[in-house]
Image (cartoon, rainbow, N blue to C red; front, side, top):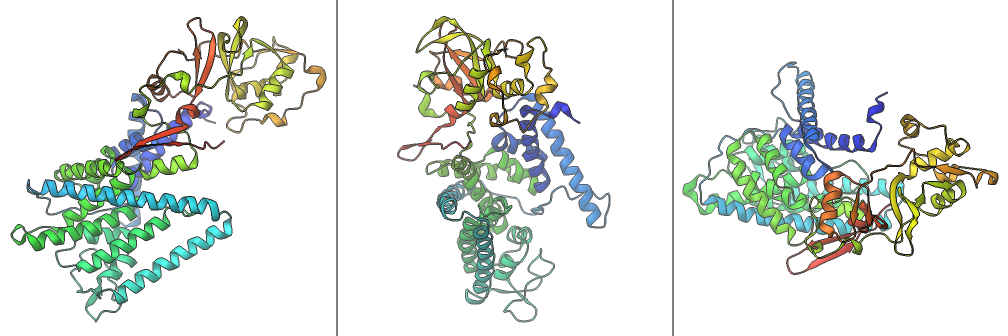
Length: 528
């Protein structure tokens, strides 16, 4: 079934489409979902993929809308495009002199995000070293859950009992009375013990005076460190809502400060809460285009697009002075060789010879079974150049390039005993038979009497593999890999003799981050 989709290429595109559809359904932002996939979720992009992912995002949003209308008892009412509803902002007016304030808030959000990323990566390294088994993972989850509940309870009781009259909270249907008199609700408990979505809407839309400044400050600090601790637990989790809540808290606090110092302006603190939320999320993720569009679509007001864009850009520029985005840092920590969209700035003067693998393991057009078995057992490469060794073969040149054959093709040929009859050719479906769990070479057992048999590789090799001359610079190679979605690139001299080979691992092994005062180069420990 669906044999067309049984390939790495289609699987890669489905991952990009799934990332876009998930964001589109969560925030009711199909365009934002496409841009999120482009900015963070895709390792390859083309025009065809764009419309397919956009179609998937629209279908995802529509499907969720249908189910939400059914759950809410209004089947067919398609007014709930996203799972997370931020609500509509009533007052979106802003003055020109507020734009520099939004930019400053963006810079502060970048600092908050950089601190979050630094602390979380330190904690993740500690987890990887000491929290290794399932029992400890479960215990840590229980510890985080109980600590979060205790902190929320203690803050509600000891830190400035912020009791507000019922009716001031425009969002919550069930206000929390904890430690307050009848007819009142506890604002701190409302932030901690409501659903995160309701807490976020309260910070966005409740009127001036609904939260005490001490409540906002205490909640922001506590929730920040709890979010640092929570991200990376052995449970499904995310960053969007925790970072939005943290940013909305300090953003609303900034709005209260503006209303205190500029009483004649009639400042709406919810607008500042939105800018703070956008700044903090951008400081963590370092997304710009997609985040601006997602929040603009989620709030349903294009007039806030410019302030959001300014704050998001400021957050990214500020955060990049200290470290990378949280997703990039975790990808590096996991040892996944994912290439950035652009080559690092420090590679402009490097040549391809500085990173290519050398010497190269090559095969002839007709190779003995014993030699193929030896190569497959001793190496773990996924592709092998096929050469004519009679042409200029020495310690630096490995023969005239004839083609390329993949590891799983060689194993399949051995498994099917093709060396017994080279005239009996396999079909493409025979190679897809074992996808995606290809046979391990350790499971192939061939008697010694067959080791001297020859296997003709010419019918199965790629006759026109991608290749590049040895005098090419590294940025050009990097863009070829990114633009064409390559896994291997053979390096040849001017006579087309193989001199090296470059893989994605070779390009992703070293990562350079240009900081505020220096450039940090780290080596990626690639996972097998």
